[in-house]
Amino acid sequence: CGLCFKPIYTHDTVLICDCDGKIYHAKCLKIETDVALEIQKQNDWFCPICIESILPINIAICSSNSQSSNIKSTCISCEKNISPQKHRTSKCVLCNQTGHYNCMKISNLCCKNCLPYNIFNRKSGSQGSHTLNKLFKDVSFNPFNDSEDNDKNRFFDDEIDEYNETLLYSRNTLDNCRYYDTTSLVSNVKFKGTSFLFNNIDGFQSNFVEFLDQTHSTNKKFDFLCFNETNLKKGIDHDFTIDGYNAEFLYSIEGKAKGSGLALYYRNNLKFKVSKALTLRNNYFECLGGTFLTDIGSVNVIVVYRYSSNSKIRESITELQSFLDTVADKPTVILGDFNLNTLNYENNSNVQEYINTFICSGFYPLINKPTHFKGVSHTAIDHIWCNIISDNVSSGILNVSTSAHMPIFACVPTSADSILNSNDAATNLIKIHNINSRSIRNGILR
Image (cartoon, rainbow, N blue to C red; front, side, top):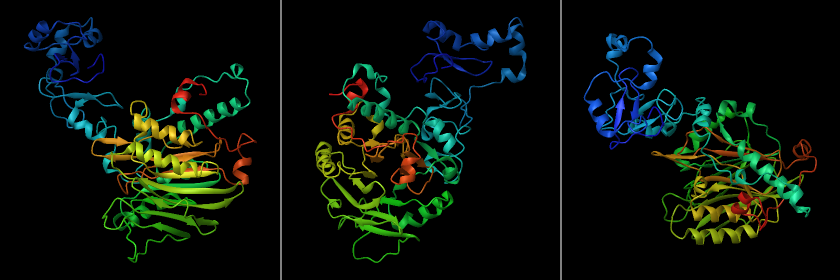
């Protein structure tokens, strides 16, 4: 509707302006339904906006103009006529032009003019990150944004300073998370410390070479490259190597064609060692992890895949909590596809429980925008969690189309330079125990 900007449905009574082709709800124009139906039978109805724009010129001028008299209400995407009595319509989220809902829903309600490429058929390096950032500007997850303004005067415990500082760093990190094209990554992101990249590659056999080709233009060698759903089978020779990297694998479940298998690549110069305690597989998830030495001591790196089954989600979160208890007391970075959409954190109890489990263990999220595109849906199911709290943490999403999942990345200060270069000279490892998303929104400790 040209007044309320809400979608128009087949049961709505509407009027189409014969001057500019815009559609209006009759109720928004304060026109009774029976009167609107009579107007529909007539020709040359003009909306109040057009009438105001042409006054004091006689309205007949508009109707006598051959071009304006032939103006039809057309879809901004398919350019075919719109019949409000037959078609559901929607506004483009970027330019606010009207089109058939079915034409625009495949591109997340964005018309073909504003979306230079189809986000569900993305092309790497297409300079599409600008459009993605605009399209999903208000589609994000940040539980720290709802907390009350810091008011240190009402607290007496020294720990509250750390609490407020942690909230600030966590909020800023998520606010700065955005999409990047491969060709502009290095020039737009400050990489200070150890860098991590994760991707659900949906099969090494079909996508590994394509992934390397598409990410080659980043001109950035990440310290760790982590993958899940590799579908690599134990005992079968393969040559999925990357120059300059060593690799560790957790092979796929025996008898399972797809949907399992992990890989963790690390640069040759890193002192990394895989850990049996951090590598496991149960009925709910699988993980492959290890430890490497840094200036701040040993740091755990763990890649996780929580199986996509929607049954027994609470049981899987309980198992996840038990696992987090074993690593929460050490600097740890966890990357993976958890198949839980954090965009639903306000209205899905399972997602809330999942987020609370990590936050109460001292971890905070680094990714907060859609990473998985399938059909007409977009979800944020690929996550990075970290318990190294600093204002020097950076994160984002790469505009790469290897699979339905976009690669996600983060850089965490683990070197002396990255910590000293922080605006806060006393950057410390801060735990967020006893804080959950609800208490964060309320701005209080429970």
